[in-house]
Image (cartoon, rainbow, N blue to C red; front, side, top):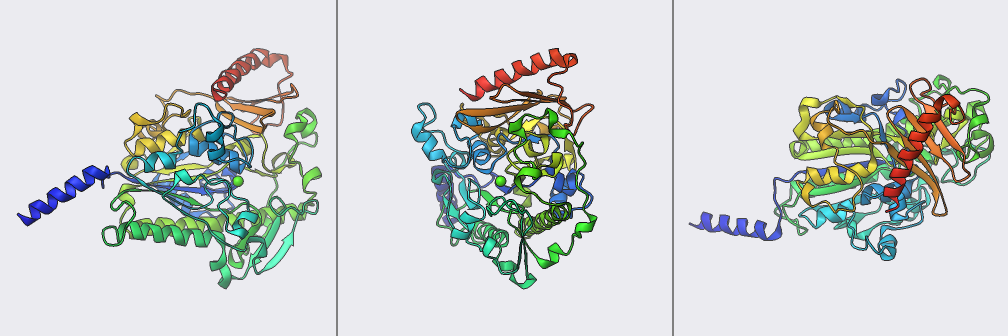
Length: 489
Ligand SMILES: [Ca+2]
């Protein structure tokens, strides 16, 4: 009788709170400034990324996923809100979703995916950089940056030394002394690695998972029994390229090959897309560029090791069967392609992003690669569907759930739509679309770029002025205008 009464109380409590223990956890791991080209699973044979590669073997890898804006703040606000950057007006780094809501007549109550899930029975938490934080400055100050407090029940910043790290400090880019974009390499003694941002972040994230699982009934004051949406923000390989010596030692700059590009590559590239050229921005000689790339790979491998710690914790805690893990970078990055580095840029490597999803329900497709065109606004409805909330996704959300591609990675039933990336500011939005075959970009100067990926995957020959592509160009202009109209809604 007592047991029955207890059961009734438990049932009525869970009904009251709206929590259902069988809803899955969602771990959302966001790396910073990570090019897909710097991961083993995306074909890089030099870089060592055993843990992200493991995640890909056990999940699915999106080969053609694109960010909405190749810069931290704008991209993060976009994927967290499920809205294009032109819709949020969040074009750059210096806005918050809160300021957008305050200004917006139509989206004043629009929740981020974190806010949406926490209103629907989840406990939502972040560790470190999910919305924009300055790297290194914001991390050195332990600040919450452009955070959206409505997204989280719990938010943890990390406070780490970054450019102040003890170790050997070198600036490999003579033309830059701004530590948020210079190629600063810092080799940290191995026994001090515990001071580093991503190690602290992984430790905090693991501790949260332990609290939610091992102690779920005893000590959880926060929504006891609720599933968790946990955003884990890793700041590497964003510069400064800080890594313990044992990771730096894995890469000999002599083994690094810089991407080849034609000498006259920029002759047909609009000025606005030449903005990250080494010859004007960084002035690295060949040896410095190779050492930068080696240090970047070391930072990637170090970040990958933190992903490994998180995956091990998920296994150890026995929650793998009830936890979706989604790994992305906030945007792509140029690693010397076109003699250019970093972001923003509308070339393919800056807009294309790594996206790997391991979902317990789709093991039959483990290791599959998905070539369907997808974009980051698709994450919001995907997470909502993981939580069984697909019918109540706010109408404003502009993406579509990726779950059909988890069911059928071939994409047979997936309607192909162009992926849309922009850069610039409110007064001058530079736009680009990626279709199955083409990349088409249009600048506020009136200049255009058209690359035919069937015969020019490295985007060396701008066909916008080629009469043979005239009808293709007309089609692409129309497609861009359609998306632009939707984004400006
Ligand atoms: Ca970034």
